Amino acid sequence: MEVESISKSTEVGIIPSDWNAVPIGLVCKLINGRGFKPYEWRKSGLPIIRIQNLNGSSEFNYFDSSYNKKLEVTQGQLLFAWSGSRGTSFGPHVWNGPTGVLNYHTWKVQVDQRAIDQDYFLHALKELTTYIEGKAHGASALVHTQKWEMEGFLVPIPPTKGEQRAIAEALSDANAYIESLEKLIVKKRLIKQGVMQDLLMGKRRLPGFTTDWKPFRLSAIMSYERPDKYIVTNTEYTFTGNIPVLTANKGFILGYTHETEGICRNIPTIVFDDFTTDCKYADFPFKVKSSAIKLLRLCVDNMDLRFLFERMQLIRFPVGEHKRYYISEYQNLELLIPEHVEQQTIAKVLTEMDDEITALELQLKKSKKIKQGMMRELLIGRIRLV
Image (tube, rainbow, N blue to C red; front, side, top):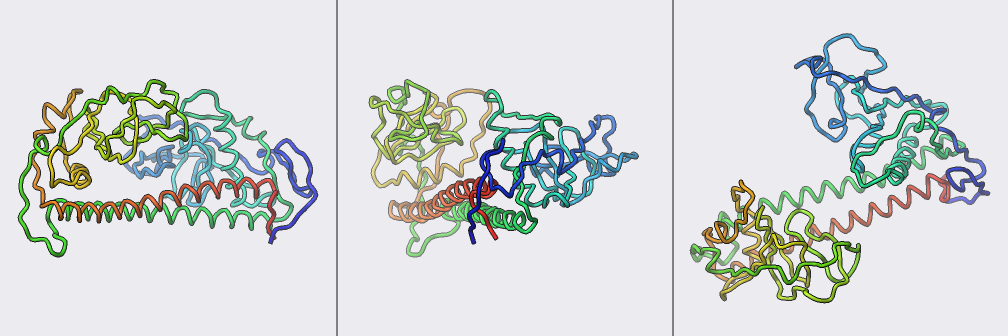
C-alpha cells in the first residue's frame, strides 16, 4: 500500500519529513583491503579477493601467512569496489564466494544494523554508484572515489526497519525477475546453438526432407559489393532515428544518422567484416561505419540468404594477420547445402527462435528501466510502502 507524507528538502533532494539524510560514515565502517604483492602469492591458503573475483572470476591467488582479521571476508559480506570499471566492478557487491582476504581497491563495509538495514543499504549504495559514475569526468571506463568522500555521501533513511525492509524486498523481487530473464535468455541462446549445429550441418533432418545435400562454393552462390557509397559522413550518431549505422562486429547497430543520401536499400544483405569474418544479417535500410566490410547477396536462384547467414555462423575461420579475407580466402570455402525448400524451412525455425530471444531481450531492457525508475522513487520516499 502506498502512503502520502509531508516532504522536506535536503541535500539528496526532497524526502518525506520523517526520513533522515545521513552521511554514510555514520552508518557503516569502510575497511580497506591490503595490497598483496606477487611474491606473497601462494598456490594454497586463503583466496585473495580481487576485483576480477567480484566480477565472477573463480581464479584466485592465495595467501598463507598471518593477517589482520579485519581483512577476512566471508560469504554474505557487503563489499564496495572504490576503484573499478564503470557499470561492472565499481560499486557494491555481496560476496558469494569462499572465505578469503580482501585485496586493495575494495572496502569491506561493516554496516551498523542498529542504524540501517543492510539489504536496504545495499540498494542505497547501488543508487549512489549510479550518481558517482554519472559525475565521473571523461569517457574513461575506470571510476574511483576516496574514503573521505565516500563517508560524506548522504543516504536517505526511512524511520523504521520495517519500511526499509519493505523497500529492499520490493527491489530484490525486481532484481530476481531480471536475473530470471537473463538466465532464460542464456538458456534460449544455448538451445538455438544446439539446434543450429544439428540442422545446419545435416545431423538432424526436418520431417519430409530426404534429398542429399550438395557442395557449393560461396563465390558461386553469393556476390559481394564494396560499401564505399554507403559510408556515413557524420560519425556523431544519435540514439534513435530511421537509418541505423552498422558494423559487422558485436556492436552491430552503432547508432543512428539523419543523413538521407547513400543509404543501402538493396536488402536483405549479409554485412561481412573483411578483417574478422564476423557477419550480421540486415533486412532493413542502413548505412555503414567504414569500408572494412563486404555486402554479400545471392547471385543465383534456389538459395536462401538467411540459411546461408546462419550456416556461416558455424564456420571456424582462422584469422591471423591483419588483412582482408573475403576475396583472398573466405569466398572459396565450400559448404554442403540442401535443396531450396529445406533451406527455407531451416531458416524459418532459426528465425522464430531468434524472434523469441529478441522479445525476451526487449522485455529485459524494459524491466531494467522500470526497476531503475522504481528504485529512485522508493529510495527517496516518493513512493512509500507499508
